[in-house]
Amino acid sequence: MKEHSASSHGQSHHHHHDHGGVDVADASVRSLAIALTITGVVFFAELIGGWLSGSMALLADAMHMLSDATGMIIALVAVLIGRKQVSRFATFGYRRAEVLAAAVNAVTVGVVSLWIVYEAVSRLGRGAEIASRTMILIAIIGLVANAASALVLHRQRKDSINVEGAYLHVLVDMAGSVAVIVAGIVIATTGFQAADVIASLIIAGMVLPRAWELLKSSTSILLERVPEGFDPDVVSEELLALDGVKGIHDLHLWSMSGNNVLCTVHLITHADHGILLDRAQEKLAELGVDHATIQIEPPGHVNHEVVCAPEEARETL
Image (cartoon, rainbow, N blue to C red):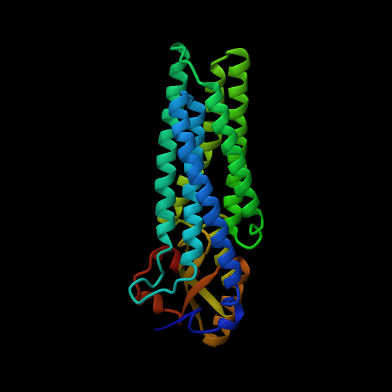
């Protein structure tokens, strides 16, 4: 039994690595670092401002900023890890660290946001006074800071998917700051204290779905589920349609970080192994697989293996 992989054969087809993008990577790191610094400062400002003013909307927006700050940290780590070579004892590298951080972030922000919603609603009956001037001042600082972050990230958003994601998060942060400013103005001019609760619920409505989606996607990656947009049946049919393929088994599709797709599969054939391997690698690349490990074997060899789905293996033979 001989195993062929993308790293050992046919690299010219789709395993091209651009080593000339150092300047772009450096620019992405700088942009993310600047935006992260600004976001971190605004987070602490809103946290303290929310406590001093009594505004739950400011605290909700602070959690919004915390979510985005963590997202930027993950994006920054992704760019830095992208430069790091794998080692003997970390053959896949440490990209799962990003996913773990994302899951922790999602749970933390989700729980805190739910607490803020509960606290904000419970205040309706207590008639808590809110320092609207402090609330508005901090929110304006947040809006200006978010605009600065958006400007910094906008320059590099087309060069990195991580920067693009951070840029979109900052745009949503700006909307949150506007909601707090509007609530503060309403309270200052009309005395309608419930405006703070309404703003809190609006911001929580923006944060909670994102936290839930982040938790679902990170959990899916950690469980090594098939990446979104991929259908194992379609991949199987495409491989079975290749000339010379008599059957397949042990097809696995997963992702290490959510940004890449890996595949392992066994192909049964009498055909020339090298030619078939080239065709299979090309087909998987067309389907969006970034790295594939393919085992070529003759008919009947499956009877000497422990496969993950023996029933399916027999059906394809």
